[in-house]
Image (tube, rainbow, N blue to C red; front, side, top):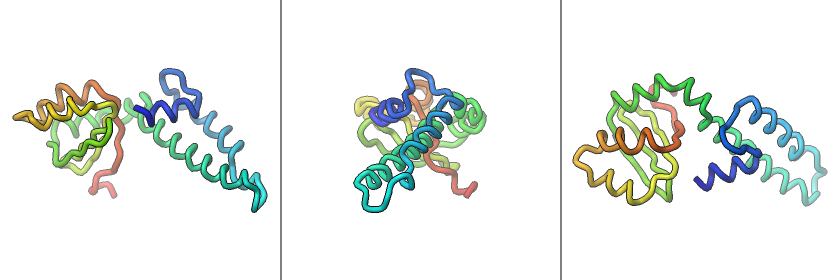
Length: 149
């Protein structure tokens, strides 16, 4: 959640992420912080390089969690969570990363250690995830399936 809030703040996103507005803001930020605007040896050039990397990462991250992106990918996501079982999972901080049997990997943000503990203690992890994780947490596809690469 910290990462989401940090990027939303960077792009001035209040609530919902609108892709058209995000793209416009992204272009303006890249113009403002492009490293080529600064001379070699200028202290601002190093800061501009770091800031431009942060802007690019933030843009791609926010696009991946935008409602429009979720709507466009809903069919594939629904098939993955309903058909493919969970192959592996990792929890770090408040992020739960689930890799499915079909090779897709999704990150779920804001998953508390208590919810994660309930999931791994559950008799049926897939069933628990369908009821408690998938519908309740912001997610993004973090890795392409090995079949698509």
